[in-house]
Image (cartoon, rainbow, N blue to C red; front, side):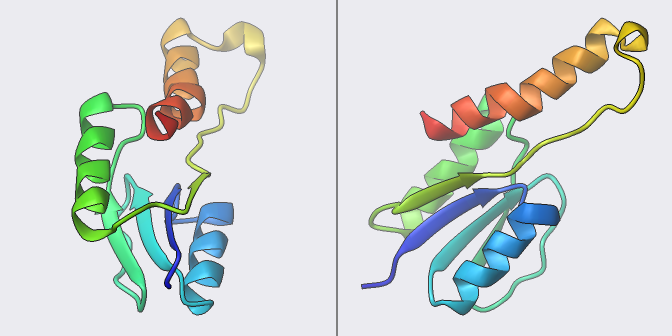
Length: 109
């Protein structure tokens, strides 16, 4: 039986590498990212902003409509703010926290 995984942050970095590796091993991959991802064998790209509860719900509704079960969730979506912490605006911190922490929580629940 084919295993199914949802991967956030699948357009680049570790998320992209995980997507490519698991797809090549025959996994059914749901690739979530705010950026569009090219269609590839075993990969269903889904545009999703993990910091937005409605976007996450829509993406996982689409996963549920196509897959009997989800065997794994890999949360790689993340953003980085480089610079002195003292110069970081509250809004920047909130955005980093929303993507990196809240996004993982929204997907896992």
